Image (cartoon, rainbow, N blue to C red; front, side, top):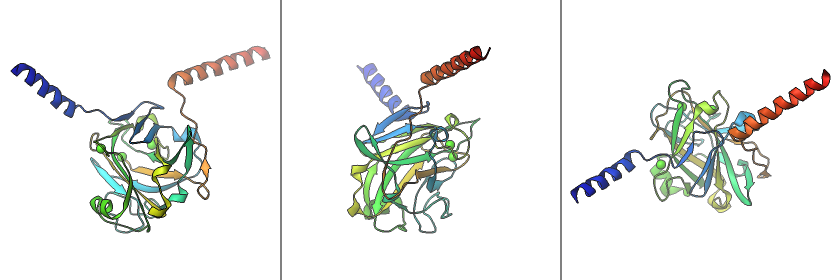
Length: 253
Ligand SMILES: [Ca+2]
Ligand SMILES: [Ca+2]
Ligand SMILES: [Ca+2]
């Protein structure tokens, strides 16, 4: 009996220590859902995002966190330049239709050391709406004074595993976050605040992490970017190109 208890306790401890990511985006094109939101690994350079608007830049080693606001000084690890960390209007966040459901689309670009440790954990996302764009304070203060509309950790601790090496280079986005549009309400206020924390499960290093939105006009519904083809499909496409090249060469001979 004692042995069974010991095994159970060990198993429970192991589950706590080895708890993997809720959504693992460390392979190209991977996606997953947490609390109704869809997270998708993408290659922003290949999807042709066009003009994007950055609204939150965070940088630190180990754990890093922050949220977008016009207020200075900022509260956490945000870049203080208004060019990179600033208020965001709900109407400037693209709305996309995915299989009949409307979502608000956010783009995340991470920068990690490619050769030593390219992975990074995204451990918290909390989204709020408010009537002003220059609110400030700690996360605890935000939670009590603003309307929270999304929490990655509602109902239990979740996290997302990211890998910078899938899409290295500056400016390339790594992940799309689709938050259900139904959660956003005009009466909560025109401004949207996104708080995020990285590095709790896999430490942050190297360059900044940056959230942005594709530039849209007046709250229009836009087409989602094309999905990244699965590696198998890419191999088939490459084989097809080779075959086309071969046939073309054949014809000119
Ligand atoms: Ca990147
Ligand atoms: Ca978490
Ligand atoms: Ca980083």
